[in-house]
Length: 260
Image 1: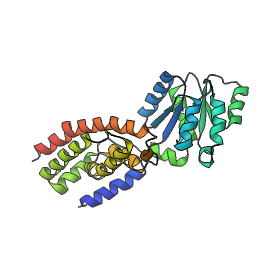
Image 2 (image 1 turned 90 degrees about the horizontal axis):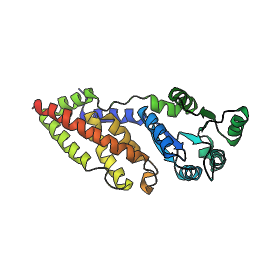
Image 3 (image 1 turned 60 degrees about the vertical axis):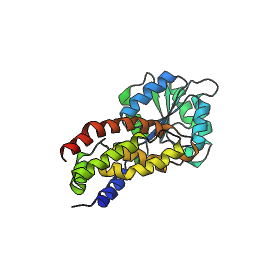
Image 4 (image 1 turned 120 degrees about the horizontal axis):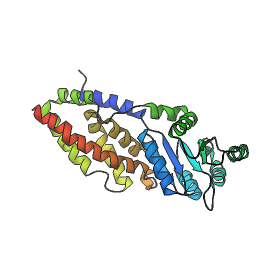
């Protein structure tokens, strides 16, 4: 029988490979961003948003993304101009795939996108399957590996292993303490949340809360978290937090109480 520490090590090794690909959506219309974000989040992507070409340049000057969806027609700085500046920011931004999102699909338009440094085109109105196909085609092999990893919300085999190792009563006490700790986490700034993520990883892994471990590890390791620049991961973990608390209170803790 594996010990708790062995289970935890196995969990950490799996979650290092589970980091999800991050997509930066650039569009001056909030409705367009919301639609694209909802669609891509449903397929397991992490989302960052920029409301203008200038905002996209600012984001990529300090943070990173695995792929950019770049609207072409935007006021002040259009998608072509933003792409040209992004490509000149430095080595890191030269290799990020940038897909034009535009209703202008003539040969001349497509050539102008390529000349600016864009890698492809997603035509408007956007078709979900075409969008997903183009995203996965242009992601790096490392990023594709991230999204192909299917991480469950709760691994019930892990939960059972914890119960066998600890016994039902100790497992129930751990679950109660964990739920209380999680409820009071991720309410402050990113620096504090980074420490909270570190504190939650071990117990979440032992309990089989795979998606939470995944996001906690990303928050803990995210280079932008300490400076408070990136809210993307925090938005995701706060949403996931409510799902995990619900499953703890409605399924995990009642099942362990019944087993006492």
